[in-house]
Image (cartoon, rainbow, N blue to C red; front, side):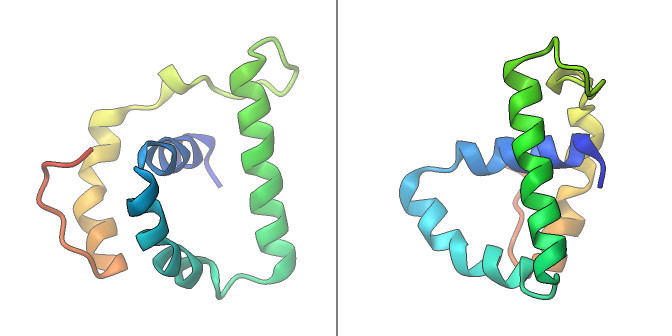
Length: 94
């Protein structure tokens, strides 16, 4: 799992308004439902580590900072992700 992808995902989730987040919960549950308990735990631990690294850039993990994410390249994947998730992507929301 690439750290940059997790950071983009985290930034997107963190930017959702409360009502929108609640509406997205069933979709998020379905997206992660096929992973085993151990895989979901590993993903959760990864997200926690990335959060700590973002708050403490002096950490020894050597993780990339959020400025290392190529947002223009990441935005190219949004139409494909929308298709996979079965949602409409109009290119307007970031």
